[in-house]
Amino acid sequence: MKKSKKIPELLVPANNLNTLKYAVNYGADAVYVGGKEYNLRSIRGNFSLSELEEGADYAHKHGVKIYFTLNSIIYENEISVLKKYLNKLKKIFLDGIIVADLGAMELLKEILPEIKIHISTQTNINNHLGVDFFKRLGANRVNLAREVNFSDLKKIIEKKKIEIEIFIHGALCISYSGRCMLSKYMTGRDANRGKCTHSCRWKYYLMEQERPNLFFPVEQDRNGTYIYNSRDLCLLPKLNLLSNMGIDAFKIEGRMKTENYVSLTTWVYRRALDHIRDDKFTEKEKKYLAGEMDKCSHRNFTMGFMFLKKKSELEDNDNVGYIKKYRFVGTYKNYSEKYDGPAINVKNQFKKGEIIDILQPHKNPRKAVIKRIISDNNYSKVDCANPNDVVILGNIGKVDQFSIFRIKNNNF
Image (cartoon, rainbow, N blue to C red):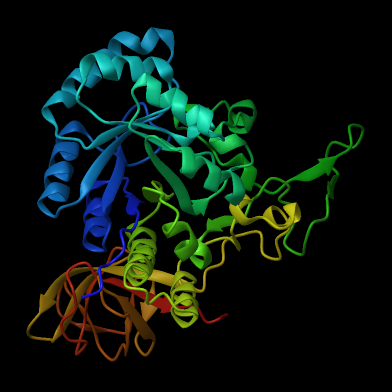
């Protein structure tokens, strides 16, 4: 019997307990989460200590690891409060903690000496000497800077003495691995403290000093001028090459994203890695998975600095905004025996007669025509479902508890 290959850990984001459950059920090997403080996605969501404990228990019951993100810069006046926070983490079984601040790392070693320490991409590690430096400090894993190219990556992997993790999917920054000050200077909200306003995605004009109300576009494309806006990273086409190098973990960016994004990206990369393990990752399969990935809202994709052929690829976009070929219309609530269909929590409007696309864990997506929409409130028939409604899709049949419901937009 042919022995299957060892493949990298698939590490998936979650910004709340509900999304964590989707990540686990769609095939994550590990999930990374943040608390209410000290992480770089602190604007919304995140876990209270009780939610973190519940999430860790849920993940571990399903054989999935959980890493806690503690990667913001720590100021001197916060050290005593951080010590108390770390002491509260003692009662929760975490598989690792992600840090960027050296002071925070020192406190971790003092208060949680048994915990595995993962070094955040915020530290901008671009060579094997940086990896070795953090190993000597006690780190167990390093997430390399997104700016590392493929040639350098191979050399780092050859010399590695601890685990290496890389990003394979998600948003890119216009700074070295996220160390950006643009948001702080423009709005007072510091990206290095978890409050990024994503100023790099905004639309900009040129204004002449003597004509304060006259704006001139700095032409880039038909949609406007987004001079900082980068494409989204997607290394799916090269995943088999990267999987065979000895990388320990593949990380998906997106702790601000919905369960739709987390479910779909996890589903795609889980399937890809399983096929790579079984030597079945064919060009046909790559094309199929790329088509499925395209159903999630995203900017134009790039393979980033890893396989960059021309620098202009990162900023020259035909479509600088989000591409939304499908809209996320709902999540599963329960199953109605009476109407033989799922009740769903509606996220975006949809109507009777549209074709719904249903994503389920570890299964191929299925499509169905919406013939009956029944209000879960009074069981009346309706022609249209709106956000925050709960409706039953009659005669759809049974679907998985963690199903995601999507509909193709008319303009695609």
